Image (cartoon, rainbow, N blue to C red; front, side, top):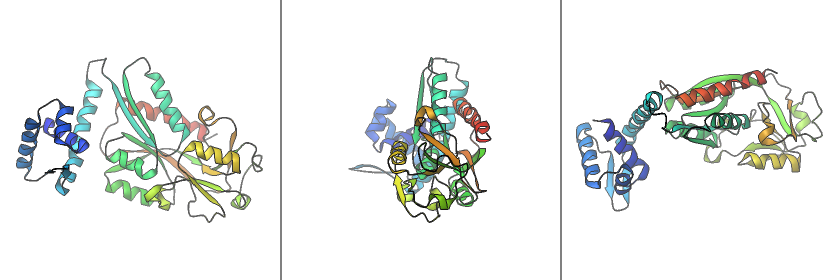
Length: 303
């Protein structure tokens, strides 16, 4: 078994086509088929089923590919860290819950490398997709939060996927609303104060479990609830309907504008912002730098 064969198998799984994979790998289709056949014979498993509609990954193949992707990714990370060719692209991908400060950190990272070649990707998305993107090697890191409510459930989910949560900083819970909201001048806000205003939360799709919620106190019985898919819509609902959401209190005016405020919620609960990664897999140079930028927000969360 060779690293080349592993790369072949991963590419076939990505394209779901032997012909497309061969074209992407710049080899002939017969040569690719032969390499995979030899790999299957060596491992005594069937990785792919070929039919007229393309390629189907078998159950054994899914298990094998989870290891193969890890080996291919590790190989790429070694090349990225130690290759001497300064003209190579810097590659980094991060997925996150809807945190403007995490987006701003990504922008800072990109600006630091604006004089170099790079290939960067950012995915601001649902919690389950953040976890899946890291598991499937679409992203090196995922930015999420844990609390006393969701910690055990999230840790179990991550452990089953061979992932780990690394805390960055802990912060209070804040109510995020427009600057002209009737409660915007309060020093602290209680749940009873919020009763007549719509609570805004991010839609989690098919994985709409309370444990996947991006907002603290997801089980609280709000009188009015509106779900949204993106941060821009959330801000519009705050402006047009006096809606509110719960957040870390770290505001990025560069992205959200200066028309919003964060007021402390009257609670002793805290949220821990952190990142998820593959277990036992070292971070790339860009991954390390992104985390160091995020760590700068620890001071802001203590203000």
